[in-house]
Image 1: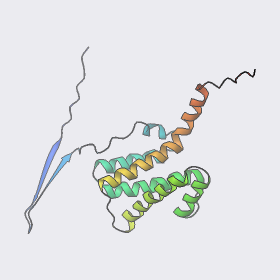
Image 2: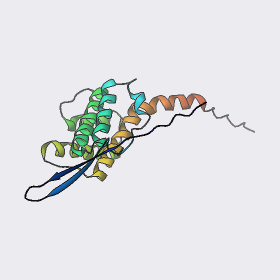
Image 3: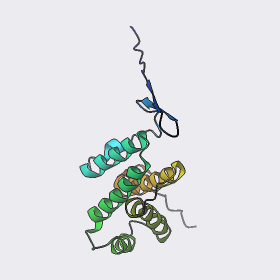
Image 4: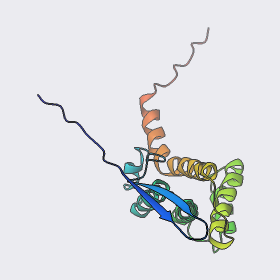
Length: 172
C-alpha cells in the first residue's frame, strides 16, 4: 500500500512601489491559515444553511487578512441567529433583550454580545479596523454563542439519555 503525500505550493509576491516613499509589500498565495475552521461548522447546515454560509465567509475574510469584513460578518451573523430564534424585534437592542429574556443568553453573555455587535457597527459606520486580537475575541464569542444555540442542546439531550439515573437510597 502506498501513502499519499500532500504538498502545498506557496507563491510569494513582492510588490515594489517606487513613488515618493518607496514601499515593499510581500503577499503569499494562498495566505497562511490564520485560524482553522472548527470541525463543528459542518454540522450547522442541519439547522440553518445561511448561518453555515456566513460562518464560512467570515473564515475566508480571516484567511485573507480582511478584519473589517470579518467584524461586519460577525455582526451580521449574530443578527441572523437572533432573528432565526426570536423573530425580528425591529432593532439590535430589542433583539438582544428578547434573546436574553427567552434564555438563549445570560445577562453576562449579553454584555459580551453587545460589545461584539458594537465592534461590527463601528467597522461599518465609524471606520474602526479591529486588530488581530480583537478579531479573535469577536470570533471566539460568536462561535460560543452559535455552538450553544445550534449544537449543545442536541448533544445535552443525547448525554442525558446515556447518563444512568441515581438509585434512591434505602431508608432504614
